[in-house]
Length: 444
Image (cartoon, rainbow, N blue to C red; front, side, top):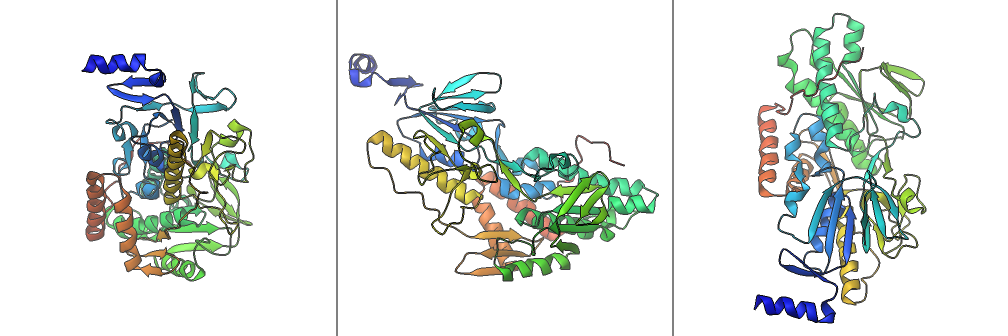
């Protein structure tokens, strides 16, 4: 029976473009997905069973649950609790090939992507989901002293610097230097900045006081800087005001209305005022990957590809751009936010478009983003949620926020691990992920 089946494939011309991979016969339409974030993984998941072979390329071997990255940076969670090997997701999908590599260019005429090192991979359909990094508004020289938060490496760098600041202050005899070490400055009061400030304040005032003998960690200054008029500007003004008060209750000093004009190893200039600090965290802006440059197409101010209503790159029928790499406009003229639910919706939509094309069916209508709400937490037992039709704040919002994040984690094991870590911290007030690794020399 098996021999007759293979012979039929060889002799029948309708199977001329079919391949057999580990016993699975499929058409030769090759979908290349660059980026293993929320959008890329959703796309690959939703193409299961489609007549395609898929190559998923990422420069890291893990998928990162970025909404909880700040909790790694602030000693709440370990890296292994919010990141998982990409290969493990598709071990039972023989049509999916995962490559640990970095894409450095796209030749849309030849239908190939170029990897660092010069290798090329041909595609029939290309999906760019390459994400974004932090932006310094023309001051890239600030990055070494003010790291942003987009990767696990960023998170462990920030965690190391925060913990080392307390350790160095414990050894320091000069009061001025000790004060500078205990000043923590977060630039940018969006969700990431607010969440970082709240947890660092709790770390200093709740977790560490009994562990140090020469310093009073409760006297640490956590300064949150926002160039705009209020924190969390994307939220309703009432929720923003609540967040401001909640931060101040935690002991965070909130400075709004003046931008950062310089960053050095000694501190930050806010407007015209210099503030000493040895630990600065950047949470003020994002810059998309160079996908627009690869394609030679229009980009917005953040470098995102301005896509059409079907999430295609301009003039490119076989190239889709999704997630933080894409500027997707809504009907009211606003852009789709760069958050995980939006990326997942875009990945699912592009999978439908590809399936429709291969089956000869009409394409789905234009992409329509369904906003599922905005969430931000401000330390323990305080959060804000804006569902549009209902707004929540306080401890109720904090519980909803926690349940929502646990739900979206991948796998029962990790849901349990994160839930247990949060429960332990809630009961004991102890942050468990406080190991200092790859120690760097403290800046004087």
